[in-house]
Structures are given as C-alpha cells and as structure tokens.
Length: 362
Image 1: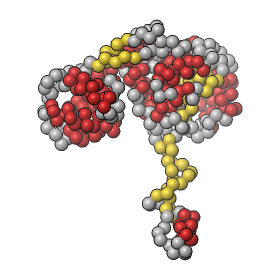
Image 2: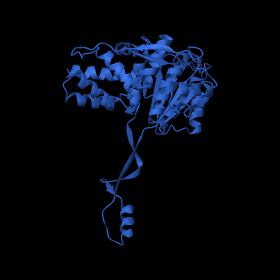
Image 3: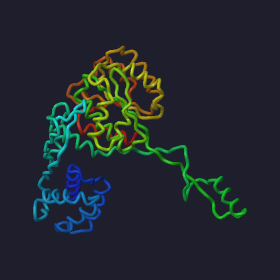
Image 4: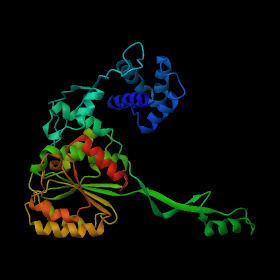
C-alpha cells in the first residue's frame, strides 16, 4: 500500500507541475478511490484519476499526456513508474519586471518528478535562468493556507452557547411563544502574517523569489497578509501582489518599488513600520533579510525589541543560513537575533515549503 500511495502522490505532483490543480484534497480522493479498485487495471486507474484530479475540460489534455508519460504507455506497470516528462512554457521576470528571454521569448522547461525533487534543494542564487523559472513554477503551486484562530465575533450555529438576544427576538416575533433556543459559536479567521522583504543590493539574488513566495501567501490568504519591501524606504506592495498571475504581480511590484538594489536601513524602516501602526500587534511578522545594516545596529536592536513585544511571533528569514558554515556575524543580525522567535533559511524551494509549514501552525 505504501508503494501505491507513493506512486499516486508522485503522479499528482507531476500533474501540479503541468498546471492541473491536483491539490491535497483531490489527491486524497484519488487514494480513497484507488483503495476500492484493481490498481493493475490501467483503465480503472485512468478514470479514477481523471474524475478526482481534474477540475475542468481544460485539464483533460494535460492529464492524458501526464498519465501516458508517468505510467509508461499502454500498460500500467505494478513496479516503480518512469518519471513523467512535462513541457511547460513560462516567462521569467527580472526585478525590473523585464522578461529574461527578451521580447516575448518563451523557454520550454522540461519538468520531471525526480528533477523537481533535486531542484527543491538547490540554492536559487546558483541555478540557471531556466531552472529558476522551473522553481518559480513549483513555488506558485505551494499551499500556504494558515491555521485558523478563534475570533471575538460570533456566528449562528446549531450547537454552542445560548444566543439570548436572538432567542428573545424570535420569541417576541411569535407573540411570546418560544419555538426553539438559538445558539452561537465564535467565528474563526486565519492568523495575520506581515512580511518585510529586503530588496537591497546584497539581497538581489533572492529578492525576486522571496516576493514570489509573498505572492503565494497573499493569494492563499488575501485578507490576512500584508507585504512591504524594505531598503532605503518602506513600500507597501500588498495590492500589487493580489494579481492572480505571478508574472503580472511581479511586474506591478517592480514598478511600485523605487529602491531596488539600493542600500539597507532596516532600523529606520522598521521604526517607520511600527510608527505607522501597520498591523504588527498580534500578527506573525516575517523579516526576510541578510542583516547587512548600513544604519546604526543599536537602532535596529531597539526596534526589534519593540516589535517582539507587539507581534505574536517574529521570524527572521536569511538566505545565507542555508549555506554550510554560515555564522550570523553582521552587526544587523547580532542586534536582531535576541528578539527573534525563529531564525530560518530562505534559499531554496524546500526552505520556502518549511517556512509555509511553520506559518500554517503559527
């Protein structure tokens, strides 16, 4: 059963890489269907996957191609399947919003299940343009849903505490006759996340991918996510990241940020962020920076202490932490770390997956 689960989940990952929305819930439906089928029957497996993993008619041609490639042609093999080869077309966007391939150039990116696993661990600053575009494609299908927390507001429910006001109002409408007791429960809402992305020159190899990760957060929880760029000034880019298409969102962000590849004044920008009252209280605040502070590290330390008192958690993402032998020796990092709840890497797709998982249980 373990081999069957690995085979079918690998097939679902291949479909996601090809653009079919085979998410976790659809994959679980496929596994439940497979438990009731003869999995050596290729036709039965084909229809089970088609009915559970496809969301509409547009997905059917991609599903057919992936199924034929993944399960090796005319017959489904009971052993380990051959890796699927799926050709996708993707634009790469530079921090200035220009296509890496020139005017309308498109590059065919071969994506296989095994190749995707290798790319998950690759440092985004050390890959080719084609590999980076493939990583961005895999990042765009990342599930960044967050754990829900109890709100102070109430909603009507069949079970829960007595809703005296609704019960009395209904009793009065019925002329004093009580029909039934009304009840209510607390609403739930996702935990707010505020992301500050350093777009200075030292973060240039990672800023584009970090902003794409921010786009995933905004897309999954648009009302519970705020994103700012920091460098020589503080810029709110949440509205630009609400575009569903990652390429369009990145072009809008590129046009909105005036200080790409400039200096870093984290202490001053963090002070401005807190003085604005930008929603740090009770939120999970994520700061993505390498800590190269041009300003006074003491100011940064003071503002980080202030932030830690307001936020529920403070997570610092440093892409260099994923490198062997890294030590946080810069003045900015040494000033900030005593006030950080978690210090994590942000250099690869696997690191972003771990960060998304951490935020889902914040």
